[in-house]
Amino acid sequence: MDKIIKILYVDPLSPVGHINFNNIYISALSSINNIHMDFVFQEGYMEKLNIFNEHKGKSFSFCTKRRNYKGLLNKIAWRVDQMNILHYCNKLLRRSKYDYVFFSSFDEISLLLSGFWGKKVIAVCHANAEHIPNSRISLISHKFISQKSTLITLNKALSDFMLAKGIKNTFVPHGLPKVVCEHKNSKRLVFVPVQFDLCDKGIMIDLISEKVSKVLQKHNVKLVLKENSDLPHNFENIIYTDKILSKQDYTQLYRDAGLILLPYNKSSYVFRTSAMLMEAIAYNKNVAVPKVKSFMSLKKDEDKGMYIYDNVEDIIAIIDTFFSSNTIPIPNYDKLKEENGNEVITITINKIINEKS
Image (cartoon, rainbow, N blue to C red; front, side, top):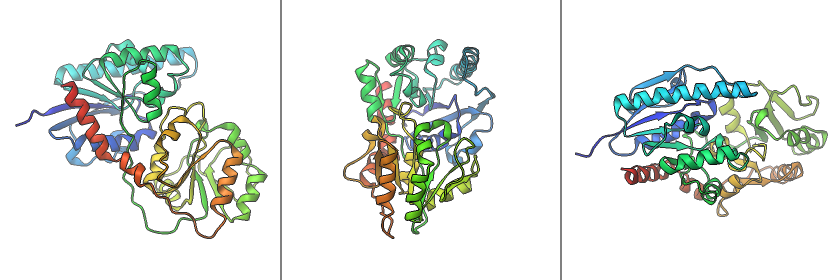
């Protein structure tokens, strides 16, 4: 009988934005033969995940409410909290003798300073990916960690960049969330699901304008975005929702949208992967994203439905062309879905585990 592989699955950050990702990866890991997983999340986070009973092992939780990273003292205090979480995980590792600890997110400096890194650690690069090109401390931290641990990168652009900087890593796709798609026509609606603090402020100011409003009116299209008091509210066909949407309302807007617009800040998303982009693809929705390396490396020439823009004029041209007829184009993401399916994640991580054993 094959040996049971015990994994402690941890999300030290436990952000809402990782719910889809954690669902995808827990499902993919569960498909590996002889895997047993226990979980560590922030208090109350486990209940937000769609983990079926057969995937559940023991669950442990930590309590931290610190989300303010601004200012030197807050950054230090936040990293102390992160190191305490890692210390807790290390105690669980020693007590239960896990074969691997899988970090679905991590702060590289906290992980390095904690000393909790070695061949038992597999860690996924998320938001920390944006720090590597801009911070020598972050780059050195990732390089040290990668010598003994396995770092997972979620897009080819980041993987290639890190390898060029001497940071060993393995590219594993983000994967696609499981969604229920109703077979109905999309509406003449552009949905912006991104929180304002992640958006390109200049793009947003130019987007919420009379010029864009006139294009929307010409094609009888609604632009829907989350409430933000800093933006004008007096333009026709530009509609604000509540700042925080219910899961039901959010899902309905994704299903209804003819086009998903993700106006991310380019400097932050050069090497970051977007869960919202993968969600749009899973819903088989047309989607517009900024011209950055991470998204360019994901786009497949064989597919259709993913539009790349460089500025607001490009967005206007996409809307103008896209909604010029009564029929909204239907995307085809066959190649992208093939390369980002859960079975690819399962196979790649299984290979990592076999190589580390």
